[in-house]
Image (cartoon, rainbow over all chains, first blue to last red; front, side, top):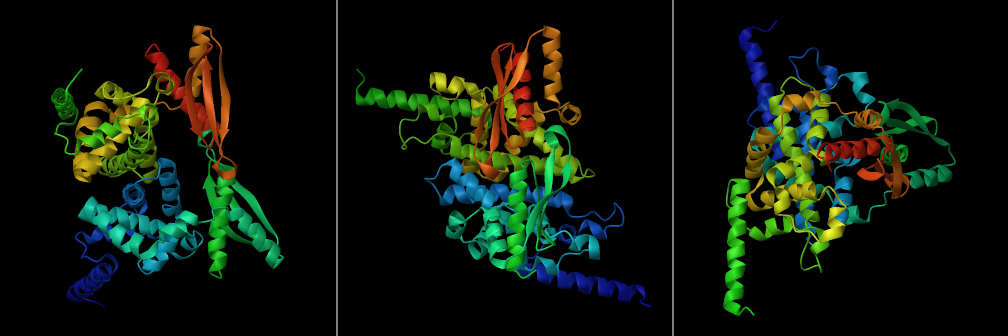
Length: 239
Length: 239
């Protein structure tokens, strides 16, 4: 059994390790490390309210990312109209894009998650990435967050020309893929969430008898596209 | 006819006047005044591309407002979950709310607009308000913008308790109002904008034979609610 001294030693050494890993990830040492721990904590591991999960930070990070990406696009494309800027931003600030980026950064190595409940939700890492941005914002302020995002995310991992030319009709791609592989697929409305003006469709894509993607939106067609986009990403990764 | 000297004098005196008016509005002197002029310039007055309108700044300002309001709510409600925060933000960052705020600030006195084409669109002032936030962000940076927004908008013009308890079923209110005033009303789909997953409904509310509001959304019901909200605001103002 560990005595108090050992417990503290283990605690501080794991803390120190986290600090170093975060320095590698972020390019700077974290100030308030509790914020980063919270950013990586999926709700499946929270027993009570004393251990907050990452959902509030995700709310904050998502909005901060939109502002940063908006600023970046505004500056990078001085002659393009707001329609172009809006389209580009929606391609950059998307769930599947955040999942990709999270994977490249190795966010999954930091995420605390509890088996089953987490594994089913494929956007866990993308959500943690958004929460991480919220944590940086609270810890270091907007300007540091902006620099981190532009230098470590946009410049390192996003190809603007590719994004500009990106084909966004993922449903057509699924149809092609199914014909090529001679398998069946089906978009299934799993649930209608909310009522009246809040009603959104939760759509699942069953491809070759497996659920390969899901999407949720006010527009059923848009929810299908989201599900198709996720499925293409997963099929491409051999999942 | 004015000679060059007079022209310059008039130009600089009007410039000076604008600077002072902006100082009153913002609480600080503008740096790059061209940004503010652009923020107030509706596309109806732009003859060519040399005179950019305010739509790009509106794109930027809208995202900056979301981040600032997200930060504010995160801090103000430390124990509320992200569902609550999202709901509150969508009530604060809404077109009708921005129109209201713009009116209180007197943004309409600054807006450059060309007759007809502008008057029909009732969100001109709210759009200019969002563009103004974009201009402040570019001119002074995020932190000054945040302080301006929290001190001059949220603290001065928004009642959080009222917003929290706000009734958001505007359609029911319209039905009530129509019964009380014994007039007819109709939600009319004016246009389906975009196709497939991009399709949005542009809905108009005709109340007592006049177009009183419009809304655009992927969800027809949500577009109706937006139209109803705008109509209630206008009817309340005797318009």
